Image (cartoon, rainbow, N blue to C red; front, side, top):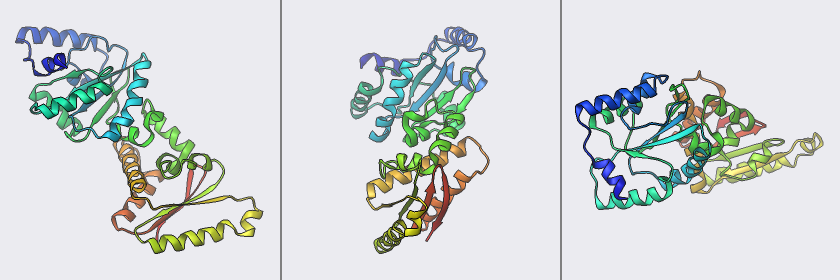
Length: 303
């Protein structure tokens, strides 16, 4: 613990030493973009050539859910030789409580990640460049050429966890093609959804009106048991979301998936349109239902 505190509280080197260190690191990172150099030269790094780098920038306000999601990501990065994580820790002022929290997080994460304290000017750059907030972890992914692959992979980590590794656009698109919107956002609702998606139609629905949910459930059961539906070999599962904690996790995944796609500056596609509609129903506190088959949404509507 002491050595980390020393590194975070130490003064910067003299001007000559700082210049020599910066030039040395710039030479090692000659293939990286200026975005990467501007941040990576602020820390003393000697083993990043040819690596894909995750800059993990955070304060100490990291939720237990995020820590749970990050642990497999850190484990996998440690096993993959071509990837590195650099933890840049922002702490405005150390207190005893923050030191205790740092020690707790360190026991979970710092066996892989490294921590560095940055001068105020460097903090301003990160704040402006990537809109960093102290209460929201930021993980910028750089590819082996030093170009930004993803502005913040925390959103895909929250949605798909380590399954989305290395959190490239290609990997995100592959997961959505294989599982569809429901397959990546609703597995907390029912663990069987990932299996059902391959061969069944799935009704997923919710809202604040319990009577409406009960009526929809009855109507869905009538459809499920319809002789003509069964004769055609069509299988339908009806899945209401009524538990508040499960509903909260579902909406968090919806929100994070939308943010992940929006930050990649992709064109407005069907996934983003469906997500926007769902979010609008939530904001209007309307009851909603979606019907999915395979990896595609067939219908989505607020009722």
